[in-house]
Amino acid sequence: MPEPVLRETQAWLMSRILAPCAEDARLASMVRQDHGASARARLAIYAGGYLQRLTECLRAEFPALRALVGDQVFDLFARGYLAARPSRSYSLYDLGAGFAEHLDATAPPPDPAEPYDRLPCELARLERARVESHRAAGPEDDPAQAALDPVDLFMTPGARVRIPATVRLLNLSFDLIGSLAATDRGERPGLPEIGPVFCAIARSRYRVRAHALTPAQFAFLQACTGGRDVQSALAEAARTADLSVGVLSVGVLWADLLPWTPWAIEAGLVAPAK
Amino acid sequence: MTDTFSDPPKPRLGLPALGDGVGLRDVHFGHLMTTPPDRWGVDWFEVISENFLDHQGWAARVLEHVAAHRPVVMHGVSLSIGGSDPLDRAYLAKLRMLAERVRPAWISDHLCWTGFAGVNTHDLLPMPLTPESLAHVADRVRGVQDVLGRPLILENPSTYLEFAASIIPECDFLAALADQTGCGLLLDVNNVFVSAHNHGFDAAAYIDALPADRIVQMHLAGPTVAGACLIDTHDQPVPDQVWNLYRHAQARAPGASTLLEWDARIPAYPDLVAELAKAKTVREGGATAGAALLSLSETDAVSTPVSFHLALANA
Image 1 (cartoon, rainbow over the protein chains, first blue to last red):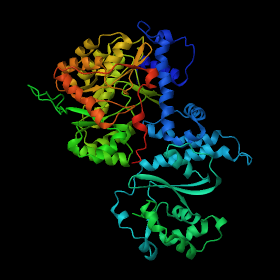
Image 2: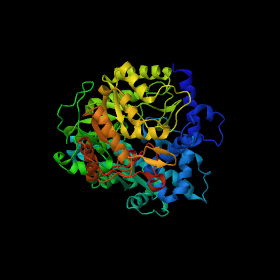
Image 3: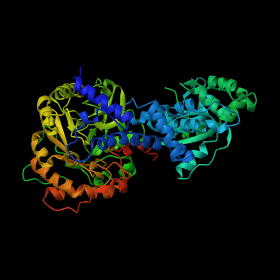
C-alpha cells in the first residue's frame, strides 16, 4: 500500500487540478514557497495546463464541430465533457470516445421546431468514427482483399463477405459529409441540409474517407457486419432497407449492388470473410 | 552521425550508444516514407509508446518501416510509476506486446505520477520526494522490470512546484532508485534547466550527483518563459543555457545517446535535423548559435504538449 503522505498529497493536488479554487487553506502547508513564483502561480500551471491540454486534444479530434460552432462554444462543450467524464484511460485517443454521447445527453429535449439541436452530437459521432477508422486493423495488409472478385461474390454460392474493422456505418439526420470535406479544405462549414443521409466511413490504402450510400447499399453493408454469405445478406438487406424507397426484391437489390461492388471493394467497404 | 571518440562510449547497463536521434512525429511521416533511409540524417528514433499502442493504421506502418532501418526507443508518458493507484497491468501488457513487435533498444518513462483514483490528467506530475516514496517507487520499478524483462529507463521531469513534505533532492532520489532497482536514467538536460530555474537549485550540481554509469540517454528541448517560471514546452530551438548544460552532462557521461524533443510548432524535418546537428558541435567543444528563450505570450505554449498525439495522419 502506498504510504499515507504520498496518497494524501496526490489526492490533494489532483483535486486542485480538476477543480481549481481561488482560496485553498492547505496550499501553504502543501507547497514550498521559498523561491520565485508563488505557490498559487505554481499550482495554476498544472491546473491551467490540464484544461488547455485536453481541450486542445478534443479540438484536434473534432475539427469540423469546432469549425461549425466556433471556439467559444466548442470549448464550453469540451470543458463540460471533461468535467463530467474525466479521462480514465492511459491513451489520449480514448479521450473523445464518449464526447458524442455526452453532447446527446446534454442537448435540449427533442423539438421539431429546433432540428439543429442534434447537429453537434451527430457531427461528433461522425468525426469520432473517422478517428476510430484511422486506428483500426484495415484491409491494406490482407492479400485476400486484393484478390476479391466482385462478380464471383455474387455468382458463387456460399461466398462470404464482411465489413472491415475500419468501416463505420452511420444513419445521419444531416448532410454532414460536406461539412467534413469543407473542414479538411480549411474552410468553415455552413449549416448542413436536413435530411437522412446514409454514410459509411472507410479506409483504403490508409486513407479514411466518408461516403454517401444508397439505402440499399447501407442495408447490405449492415447485413454483412460480422461476416455473412452474400445471398443471405442480400435477403436481409431487402427486408431492412429504408422503405421510403419502396419494397426491394432481392433481384432489384442484386442489380443495384453488382455494379457498385467493385468500387466498394476498392474503397475498403467490403472484405472477404475469414 | 555518431562521433568518433578517442575512447569508445561505455555501454551503460549493457545498452548501446545509439548516437543522435529525434522523436518520430506524424508531421514527418510523409518525409520519412518518401526519403531513402540513408538520407534521414539521424542515428535513431524515439517514439511515444502510447501513440502506437492499439494502433493498426498508417502510424503502425511507418513505425515498422522506421524500425527496419534505425534503432528505436520506446518512450512512455502513462506508466505513472510514482502513482498511488495500482500499476495498470493491461497497459503494461500492451507495452510489452509493442516491445515484442518493435524490439526497442530500451523502454523509458518518467519519475512522476499522472493521475489518482483512476482519473488520468495526461500530465507528468511531481512526486513528494520522501524515503517512503522512494521505497514505493522502487517496488513498482522492480514490478515493471519483471513484466518487461529489461531495465526500465527513468527520466527526470520538469516540475513547477515542490511539496513541503519533500526531504530528498530529486537527483539523490534518482540515484538511490537506480542503485536499488538497477534501472537506468534518461537525463533530460532541459528538464534540469527548467526545474533548477523554478526551484533555485544548481543545475550542474544536480547532474554531478547522478550516477554517470546509469545515464543511458539525454534529452534536449527548448522551454518557455511563463512569468517567474520556465515551462517545458518542446516548441522551440534549444537555448544556449541548455546547450551549456548538455556540454557538462556529456563530459560526465560521454557518448550517452542524445535525443532532440520537439512536440509543438514542429519544424520541417531538415530543420529538425539541423538543430540536432548542433549536439555534435557542442560535444566537440564548438560554440552554437543557440536560441533565446521565448515567453508564453509569444508561443501560446502548454506544458507537456500533446500535439504529437493529435494529427490524424490522413496521408
